[in-house]
Amino acid sequence: MSSTLIALAAVCAANPFRVAACAPTSTDIRRQAVAVATALSVAAVGLLAVLSEAILDWLNVSGSSSRIAAGAAVLVVGTRDLFIQPPSPEPALQGWRAGIVPMGFPVILTPALAILAISAGSERGAGTAVGMIGAAILVVAVIAVGNIRGTYWRTATVGSAGVVFGTLLLLNGVTAI
Amino acid sequence: MSPVSTRVVRGVLAWILVLGVVALVVHPEGCGQPSSGEVNEAAVATVAWFGANINDDGTFVYRYDRAENRPLGGYNDVRHAGVLLSLYQAESAGIEGAAEIADRGLAYVDERLLNTPIGLVFGRGASARSGSVGLLVAALDERRWATGADDRDPLLLALGRTLTGVVNADGSVGASINTATGSTSGRSPFFTGEVLWALARLHLTFPDENFDEPALRVYRYLIEDRDRVESPWPPVSDHWGAYALETMSRWPNADDLQLEPDLELDGPATRQWLARQLGLFGLQVRYESQRQGGITRLTRGTVALPAGVGTLGEGIGNYLRFLDRFEVTDIDVDALNERTNCVAHLLTNRQVSAAQAQQYAEPLRVQGAWFRNDITQMDDQQHALSALLLLEDWMPQ
Image (tube, rainbow over all chains, first blue to last red; front, side):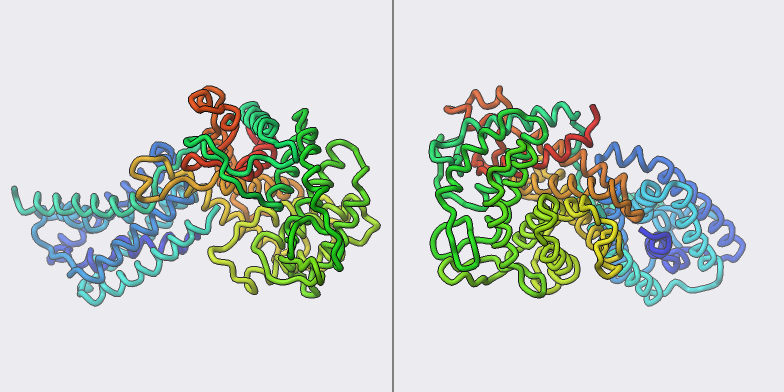
């Protein structure tokens, strides 16, 4: 599993245009909320990556099969983005707390991103996993902070990329030892 | 419930839904790590099964239904040769008495050697299979190494010349030999590797007999063309090819086969083949280890034929030896070690123990064997035995 594939799959798993669609409309509050959502998501990804070996051992799943799991999850989330309208900013926690709900959870921290963090952490080490997925989350944050509208077509485009990268990841796990 | 709480609950439900889909795709793998002693005990028990299930005419009990306590009949020459091979391998590995059982099995072979226009073959009727000749060569050569007996050398060389004749100019291997005309026809997903392995062994044993030339032709075909030309589906995890590569890695000139650089044993084409093959073996071990009864019967089906699981061990065991001599840096060694342990665990764990065998009418038909749906076939024991012998050295003491 290459670092590029991890990063691209992570961008699709966290779909920046879905995040942008549910970001608060006020510029200042949006910045604060995005900062909170980014910090929380990177922390969660880091925790999962550090614990990845223990989690996979507990589940009796090999690193190779975890790639299949990550690919399947990215594929499912990508497919969802093709068919479901992007989320709205409301309901949300007030002010910067919108970075917790809905931006952090459930929009950025999807199951696909979590499984990807576990798989990448196990296969490439926690440092690389956090680096790649953290970079992807930063891309998501930059798009969410900018005044870019999260339209259906934009989320669906990233969703279709998620279908492609999820499939590649899944095949990568299938052909691994 | 507040609207925000509702949103959180919907998010949790979405997580559960996605995790449910993922759980259908990836199941826990029931793996472990047996000790080398446990693996050896399993191999000894398998040899004992062959000793208890050989008939006076040199054949073995071919298929047996333990629930009905009856043999199911049928026989197969390729598998007979394969059984002899596994027994001589066991003798080589130090399991006493294995060669004695195999030598009794040679009586069946001696009755079925047939002169044809292409040379001597092992088979019956209008056609013989090149695979049975190939495996018989491997068995007799293993006997030579295991016991030091060279009384069968003329037979070995005669069969080797027959094999040279079934190799086509492009390196492909004729599967079926017409015993009247000596012409060959058809292809087999396994005979290419079997014939290559036999020729590779013959070159090690008789280096002046030019068996390396046809062997290299088949080797090139196997690595470059076989999968493309014959398009086997699903792709073949070729344990016989693994045996062949392992044997070729012991040739004195293994470092320089005088082939195109791509095709040398450490060349890119060989590395690519190796990676693809290890991927196939690894995937099958992972899949098989997910078959743990209960709901996995619905999602993964019933367990594979024991012979199939054995071939996974044979493939991996041979490539471990190959990689010991030709380091390939882009192979995931950790994953390979995990799969090695896992397939050894699957084999030792599924073998019928002496205590389990007591509940059946004829315990000696059952003890030390592997069953699927209450039925065993002699090649289940053959492949499992060969695999255990190959894997034993890689297990912890």
